[in-house]
Length: 249
Image (tube, rainbow, N blue to C red; front, side, top):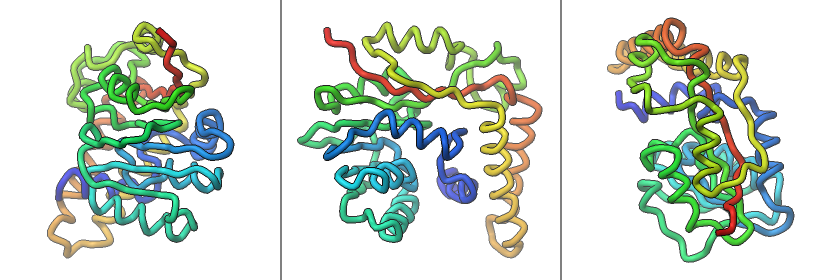
């Protein structure tokens, strides 16, 4: 079982692949997506949830999504057809960092996928040339709610310098020439809902498919993830989603 396959199954009950409730996603999109015509790009779109919701709420907006997971993109196309937005959505299979487009975008999304660019600031550097004048970036990434101990770092496979606290994280963003016009810090309840859904969906799949060659591996992954969360990074790793505009130089 590949990490992509496991992640796709794990997100069955929580298709927003980040610790954000539906209402939080809606508020962020309300602040970011323009009224009237516009173009939205999602770098690391997965199953296209952010794009589907943006297009459904804004009938004149067109969307583009990029992801490495071909099966997730197939699911995104199917859901777009079901929602009636497929005619305004283009999906590309490939690395987000390699995607190019001759036209700029009014909104560029990268929530929970900054690893594709090597971190938060490299992601913003990649987003900037893709933005139209007056455009906004919506970027979501982790931060330390409290200094991480060995158990948290081990569970996440992270180093202490991989993230900073929230104030330092936002300071780095503003120091890089961006102004936050809105933001959302995921609550403990959002984190718990996300992690219980992630581990529960993968566990349920393993138990309901006992004869599948990857059933035991799926159960092992779910158990290890749950243990790492509960005994390691719960309450230590935070998540912030920022709506940003570049500051004119």
